Structures are given as structure tokens and as C-alpha cells.
Image (cartoon, one colour):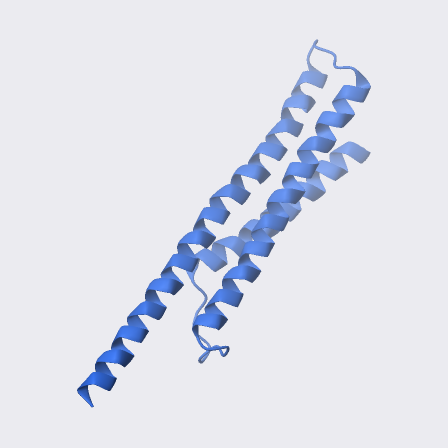
Length: 132
């Protein structure tokens, strides 16, 4: 009886360590996605500043650089969305295919969802500035 209880406690601790490792991986993806979104947005703002100053870029180069910035933002949004899906899949796998109860989402998942929303706003802002 004690051996079964010890095995169950060991299994529970192993599941918790694996869940925490998955959460650390999600946090690493949050950092990476945030960097990509910020970098892409920053590229566009640099081009915008150069356009308003005396420095003139060739129109074709300017457009290509801005599209590159938009592409980096889209890549950041997608990587955040995909990592949230992967984290959810991993948590479900650890829990045996079922999510027990309605536990509050972790801080990392909340931050990740907000980052997707902020990244989408940045993307729309960049596209709006290109069209105008």
C-alpha cells in the first residue's frame, strides 16, 4: 500500500515538473515573439522617421523594408499563437487527455494571449500606415 502511494506521489511530482518545463518553454516563446513583434514594429517606425527627415529612401526599398517589418510582426504573432496551442496540448497530455476542473489559466498563458492581441493591433497599425 505504501509503495503504491509513493509511486503515485512520484508520478504526480514528475507530471508537475513536466508541466513546469512546458511553462518555461512557453515563457521563452513569449520572449521570442515579443522580440519579433517589437523588432518588426521598430523597423517600420525607423522607415517612417527617415521618410519625414531629409534622408530619402528609394520608394522601392522603403516599401520592401516596411513589408519585411510587417512579415516579422506576423511571424511573432503566429509563433505566439502556435506556442499557446502546443502548451495547451502538452498540459492536456500530462493530465491524461482530460483537463481536470476549470483551473485558472497560468500567468504565462494570459500574457501569451495578450501578446497575440497586441501583436494583432501592431500588425493592423502597420498595414493601416502603409495604405494611407
